[in-house]
Every structure is written in structure tokens, then in C-alpha cells.
Image (cartoon, rainbow, N blue to C red):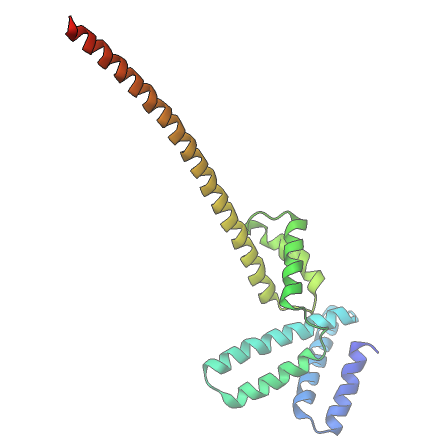
Length: 196
């Protein structure tokens, strides 16, 4: 059964069961699908429908954050219920560990070395995580990994500069030894001249 067919069946069952939240969410999903199909003159496959549902889920999560700031308990509960319904149509979400592994592999695959490569990283990750991870979460993990690389680079630079300082100290110690030896020679020469 395609996702579109499942949505049709769920709409019917939610009407029979008087599940107003599910009915409302499914109606909005179906309207968004229909709008896209009419505008672009295409028939959407399941992966494109998952993208539409993911966008609606993101909108609900953004709204939930705003409702929580405003202490709107009535809207908070309703939005949480809508989020649960939407998540039911998406594939199993990736755990943080799985997502982190994909991010690390993708950074290596793309050969990313700085934040300038963020676009390449995100473009490569998106198909791998379609509908299974929140874009904001992916973005945060990529930035975190980039920061780790920056920290490592900073550490390497400091270590290199410390090595250079150490080498410079060794050179200066040798120069000091040479100066001490010359002073000892001068002192010896001066002491011998004074004896005459």
C-alpha cells in the first residue's frame, strides 16, 4: 500500500472514529500533496510525500517551541498530538549515534576541511537521511564535527608552535653555552694578562 493510499484509509477511519486531530492532520497532508501535484503537474511518489510530511513536522515543532514560550497549554497539547500523528507516517527516525556516524562518514567522503564545505556535506547527507532525521539536528551535528576539527587544528597549530619554541630554546641554550665559553676564555686571558 502506498503512502497516499494509507493516508486515504486513515482519513476514512479517523472520520468513523471521530478522531479530529488525525483527521485534521491527514487532511492537511493530503491538501499539501494535491497542491504540489497540481502546481507541478506530477504524481508524487512516497519519498516526495515523506518530504512534505517532514516539512509539516518541522512547522509543528517550530510552532510548539513558540507555544511553550507563550505558555499556551491548550495549543501545546494539540500540537504534540499532531506531531505524533505526523511521525507515524515517517520512517523510523535515526538515533543520535547513527546520525553522528553518517555525519562523520559524509565529512570524510566529501573531504570537508572547513565550514565552507557545509553545503556539500548537507547535500550529500540529505538523501541518506531523507525523512529519518531533522535537518536542524543534522546541521548541529555537522557544525559540532567541524568545531571538533577546528579544535584539533588549533591544537595541532599550538603543538607545532610549541615544538618550534622548544627548538628555538635549544638553539638559544647552545648560543648561551658558546657565549659562556667565550667569557671563560676572555676571563682566562684577562687573568693571565694581569699576572704579568
